[in-house]
Amino acid sequence: MKIEIVRGRHAQRPPVAAAAGFNVVGARYDERHGYRRPAKNNHQEVMTTTQKSAERGFHPGKHRNRAGQFLLGLSLMLIAFNLRPLFASLSVLLPEVVRQTGLSASGAGYLTTLPVLCLGLFAPLAPRISRLVGPERTLLIVLVLLALGTALRGLGGMYGLFIGSAMAGAAIATGNVLLPSVVKRDFPKQAALMTGLYTMALCGGAASAAAFTLPIVHWFDNSWSAGLVVWAVPAAAVAFIWAPRAMSSQYGPGRAGGRPGGLGRDLLAWQVTFFMGLQSALAYCVMGWMAPILRDRGLDGVTAGIVVSVSIMTQVITCLLIPAVAVRCKDQRMINAGLALLAAAALVGMLFGPLSAVWIWAVLQGIGQGGLFAMAMTVIVLRSPDPHIAAQLSGMAQGFGYLLAAFGPLLVGVVYSATGGYAATGWLFALLGVGAAINGWGAGRAIHVKPGPPGRQPSP
Image (cartoon, rainbow, N blue to C red; front, side):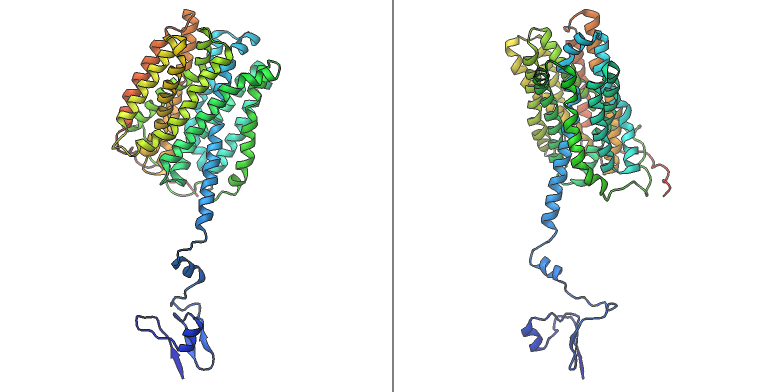
């Protein structure tokens, strides 16, 4: 005699099995063999230990996933930290570099412009490289090239100074583009927070370079080359930290699906691009020329570097706070425009205001510039419907945007060479601020970019 126990609302199980706590859902019972597990092809369900644990509220992988997300976020912040010392370290050393190498004022302008120009030239290539080797491996390449280029600036003489700047600028361009898309992919529910954290790390890297480069130079017997080379060390260290994740990443080269359509005909995409470019022009004027401007006004080199560092450190706070506030607003138009005008007005104040108030202007400029940069990165994420479009919009905004931004520090050098002073650059700062405010107003609208028809399907 055989009895088959079936699942159901009125299913019964023999008292012996029930007393033993045996789970009989979907099991078979006969007098000779007792309960048996169902055959593999049986479609009735057997409750597993994992399912039981889940019913009790315990999820084995939950804590591991949280730890993995935390480590990933921390790694992205460390990568971001290394994407700005290239600019700020040269800024505070520029008078020493000019004096010891015989570089002309226009040559100094070209040197400060070169890495920014590379940001624009190489940013459009970042999504393509990422599709070929995967974003994690691309970021590893970025760190290696950045370390090599930074070291070459201080060890290769005059040619190495320019070649290393271009090399590191190309690496930074790629990293700038990929970070928003990785955040969009891996932190979809915490995009604003993560954007604030990694932009905070960007500002922290710039502030550290502005504050510590000159003391490092003094420590190494006034060797400006040592002040440039030393910033290759953290980039190399983070490359070693990131390498295991990059080499074991499950996100490999893209093999399926068509490329997203172009954004060249989308007005919103261009407003995001010009917003990014004009605010970046202001930012690189600060990082590239504010220390020389303050030294020209009478501050010593260390004090000028600390003023710039205070301004950039203030950006760290607003980089973290502004995106979290902005995403809770109906749109970001007023925030974008207000920050742009504040950053430009404070920069003009640092140029013309009394030196006794320079610290106040530095803090105000940091509030405006830090929030402005954070919003420029945030709108790339907010205006993108998915990670692929985020990478494409990021490439467009940072490609064309940084080409536009390169004219900011270049024009400061040209104006200084033509007039022998920095007073006329006040008009340049004002125009950049107004242009950023206008385009920030458009980029702050709560809509998505609309790409054109998708491209050809790539072969597997």
